[in-house]
Image (spheres, rainbow, N blue to C red):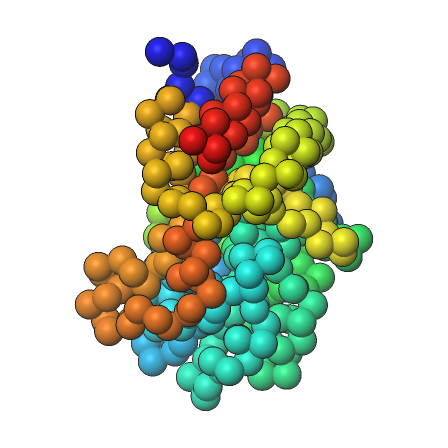
Length: 384
Ligand SMILES: *Cc1c(COP(=O)(O)O)cnc(C)c1O
């Protein structure tokens, strides 16, 4: 049997390993200087003022949701074609996720469909840059401004992507942007995530929620007496926060990985071009699109199988040790969501997409041989 090709995989080199070891041998393995350095480097790479690094992308979504004040009775609009975390963060805050349908070409949330879902209860929009392809962020941000809503962009797939000439994460069209550093994502810290923003108020809230809601900054104390009395041990818990801190050795890995992001994305693009070329004459295989105003980070390569049975193709690929996946099951199909009464049929375009989608392996370290093998096996099974 030929070796297994996963759908995504990290690329860790000796430089990454040395960077981590160096921190492990230092005085600070957590709450030290590497965290700030990583945050500054991500902020500067994206072109944002602030960044707050945390223990996962999910934690990043949670503190972003808390920082914009989502609470019981509030609604936030997101896409059904995403990882469950994009909607769960609303539930964590006691709010209700509302699902708006997708555009069939980009698989991203449709601004027109968002418009129909805005109510008096709506607090935020959580668009997801699916597969690394930025959403219609300008339209979404305009909608949000007209209705006084916060945009939390879930760019877990899209570090390094561009939209109308600006990097995703610059927050030109969002209030906060979230990234994940899980090993299958564009760069990795093992587990990890970050929120970028240009808004100082959000920034300060994010810092609080990351660390138990505790501040040691005397200018922010509500109890001035303790501090003027010179109680140097004094700190204040002002919100119910969490321990969502990331470690210094993870951030050292992040800093080292970030140096290679251009190469990683270039490799992804090359693989995408090879796939596109290989499948262009196959009617049953629809390849992904990239709109002219964007540069995708190409986290995923999703083909849509037309006319023939998707499940049969999927199983044949798995049988041949090719780690295909389906991204994603519509979130509201999940039993936990079904319990709340979300009905099938809610987002017809998303549901139709879900019947046809297969993610093929795509990661920067894929060899030409592996790419050829995936192409060969797809062709063989479509024509069999
Ligand atoms: C990976 C991912 C997350 C969650 O990130 P973790 O770092 O795994 O917690 C959130 N949203 C989307 C769209 C993702 O792909």
